[in-house]
Image (cartoon, rainbow over all chains, first blue to last red; front, side):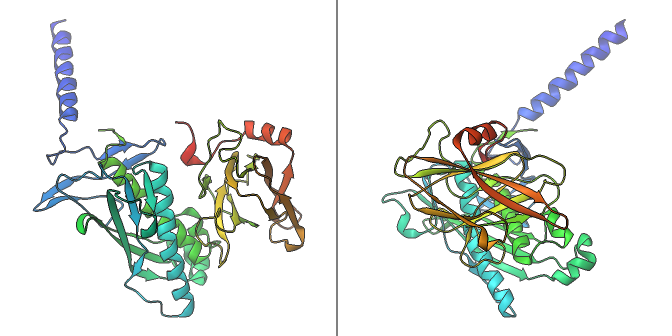
Length: 232
Length: 155
């Protein structure tokens, strides 16, 4: 009987300790929840973070690099300006150059769609002329830093093992009046199920890959802006 | 206007690029016409999303499928619908996938609502995507069984 009461006491203590740990989240410390419930019933993961000299570096599982400035949380801005996508790479042939142009366009289109849906900013614009006068603006400029057009033939033979997939990597830089406040790098190569079945065109696979990056970047912004509920 | 199926396995996402208008109103912008593209079927083998293309300004999606002039209005999965509003004009759409000789036209009038039903037609050798206009009564009945794009579903 005494043992039972003792065990109950230990269990309660453990529960309380765990609960207290879970609540000890502070935006100014390294302890920060890594998983969040999104508003559309998914789970968004941003990974642990480390303080650097000028801000926070996140080990975001969907990005190769992810950094935000200290005391910056994406709030207090009414307009997001998605600048035209740049490219550091040039295609080796006409088809690759066409795909790069399609991807540059699609990056703006997909990021614009997802940032509008997230309701993080009152205005999401893709042209400087559409920025409202006097707006408090964040500018997101993205650059294609890696590109491979992939091979439909290789996908037919071994597409299910990842062969022949196109590759696209983006580097994004968000600025407030020219000062960097958020930077990231992400890379995708045939993330959708259809990409593995040799039935999709390379440029359509890259659209899916861009959607995947846009989803993760917009989720990250939503997490930092406090739009999602922590899970842990 | 063109309809092309994208045969993906797994669950198909429904998404659209034009703004999704307020469903509590018959037409959000009275100077425009509202269009519903409804896909009710949920049978096995219909899991892929159908892509629906259009021309600007309403079609603001990416240039997919190798098209250089037509942009995506959206992708509709089984049991889902798209909804957008367009300025009054003759609205041309292809009734059978890749069938340019099956072109049909709806003369969009401001304040009116138009319903298109999309479905997969199984032939002897191939499956093709089709679209047909339905009247308001049938359109409303189809909508009762379908959900809006994933980003606009009630949580």
